[in-house]
Image 1: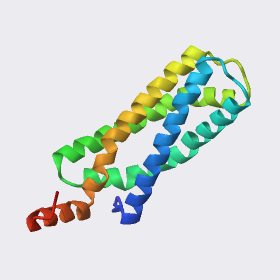
Image 2: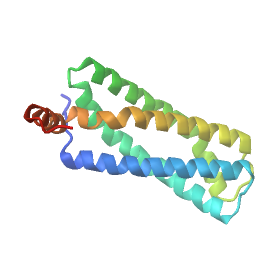
Image 3: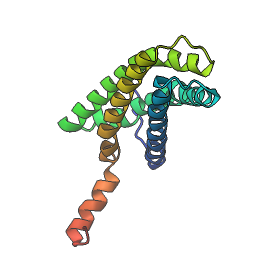
Amino acid sequence: MKVRVKPTDADLAQLDAYHAQVRGHLDRLAMLATRVENEQLDAETRAEACAIEAFFSGSMQDHHRMEEGTVLQALLDSGNAERVTAARTLQQDHGWIEQNWIEIGPQLRAIAQGNHWIDPSEFMHGAEVFLELCYAHTALEEPLIPAHHPAPKDAVASAQAAGTAP
């Protein structure tokens, strides 16, 4: 028997805050990739690579597991064909993101450790693919987070009925 966990308001607030962190780390990765491409492998670059790698290897993995068990499951259980399709796409995205991370994660660890075996153009390509996947995933995901949770929709509908909605 599968236990279904309905996300709470606290879960939703945590996801929203987490997505802001993800965007920040993605932006940092984009800047780091440019530094690596320009072969600026100094102490600052190594420290930045260490921080980015730690975030995506740890926190991102935990986030995906939590999201799969709460938000995406709620979307799958919604009975709304559009939401179910979006949830399945988001699940597939998680797989693609994880697969791409398997390729660039070791390169980031090497940069963080000061190893110079990294091919800058290969790392740049891998980072670009990872960034594109993550930005597209986030763009699809963010509008759906409140969609599975009826309170925001009910509030909008009530405001529209009362004539107070913008």
